[in-house]
Image 1: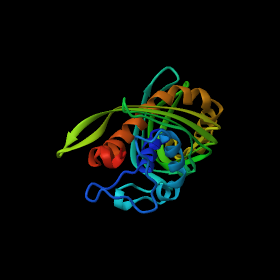
Image 2 (image 1 turned 120 degrees about the horizontal axis):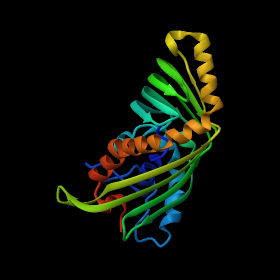
Image 3 (image 1 turned 30 degrees about the vertical axis):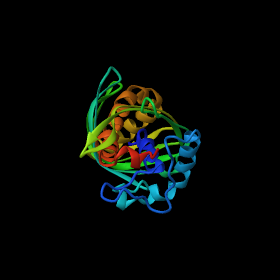
Image 4 (image 1 turned 90 degrees about the horizontal axis):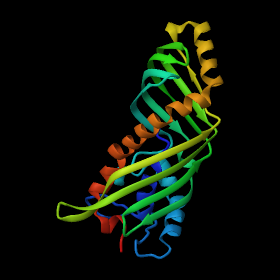
Length: 251
């Protein structure tokens, strides 16, 4: 599910963040300076150069592997005319995040703002679910395994930061993050609906996929808000608060 804000993490890695204890990067990591007039080009190039490290994870920087990326739990809740349900997703495994391609990576240094555009050509998600509610005019109840596929995912990300002192050193601290997503070819399948009743399970899955674009449109704001929160809480604030500004983006 984490399809949106991961790009900001790539940004931080690409620009040169380091572990709090050593303030050093692995030798293979590129570094971009905030005074560079070609900063955006440097950042775009760096996102390509760090792809393999991002995919495998960087333990010394406390960055988890992105291929696959694992989320322990996500709770989705919606209450509209088309969708009225609560779903708990656990042990979510996401394949394909490392295939990202950035087309924009701007750091507005004076105003401490990031602007990023990226595409991921295909994604596969799988995990466990527990759902109770209504989709369209039909009830949906059950728990089991789910899979979901997306043919293409376009992401736009914005983050605003402020400067602040932590342990006597200057940091840039995110305080507003916004992510939007557009997808093509979304498909989903849930096993175990209605206590394993195959007929109801098949009918419900067909209804979901026959109306998947409408349903995704209804669920999109909830997904974007959820993913933004995950990125801020698990990754972005953690990195920014532990790495001083001058090591994150040298002058």
